[in-house]
Structure formats: structure tokens, C-alpha cells
Length: 165
Image (cartoon, rainbow, N blue to C red; front, side):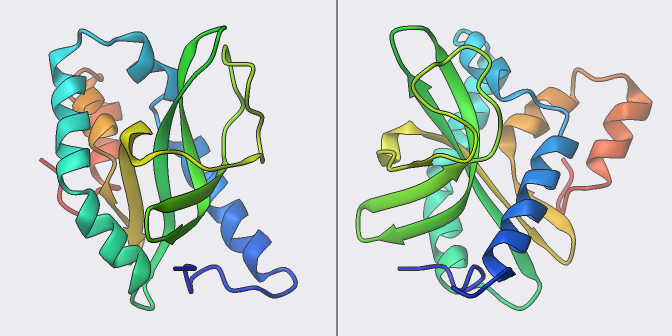
């Protein structure tokens, strides 16, 4: 199903996609941190929670309210060079087929590039997020990392969350 928050039309899709990219750039989490720390118990628990709640994300993506936007999934890409996680926007889901667009620059992986459309398997999804009334839902990996931040920085990022822990 195509996400109605990204309707076809000159400029509208690009504008929403650029908002999503700006959201990713504002996050404290480098996409590669998760992939580089496979033995980190907090991050592993965050991925588990994100995967367990993925049906909620898909339902919200398919039926967004007027205030819900900036839908993104974090996808793990493995190639001969490295393993790296990427935030992806412009999400389209039809049955089991997922398509999305890479929203950050690769640091190590060489098989994808910024702005490239990919078709990940659901098993590659390690996190998700969207904004509702400006507040972030999901983004469990960031939540895990907030616990490690200096208090002032952590409070800033908690203020962006819909349900800070």
C-alpha cells in the first residue's frame, strides 16, 4: 500500500522526504552505532522491541492521521565491505514487498548510496519511527542511547519523544 502521506505530485513528495531527512540529521544516533555494537544488550533489546511493535508502525503508516508524518524505518545492510544501519524514508509497502529510500550517507557499506531506493526484507528492519504532533514515536535505538548521554543532552532528546521512558 502506498503511504498517503507521500502522495504523488510535484514537490509534495520531495518536501516530505526532505523533512524526514532533516529529522534523521537531528537525531543523536549515528546509524552505524547499532551495527557496530552487536553484543550491546541495551541495543539488542531496543531492536527486539522495535521488531515486536512493527505491526503498529505498519498500521499507522497505512492509516495516518493528519498529524502523523516523517515515517522512517531503520534497515540493516550487509555487503562485502561492512554492516551498517540506514534510516529510510518514502516507504511503500504492498503485502510483503517493502520499498524505501536511503536517507543517510553510507560510512562503510558500499552497496547503497544516499537517495537510493531499496527493497529490504522485513528481517532487515531494526527500528522504526514517525512523528505525531511533532513528537517521535518508536526510535527505540535512540531511547537506548539516551541513557548513556550527558544529562543535558539526554533531556533535550527526551523532550522530542512522545512517551519518554
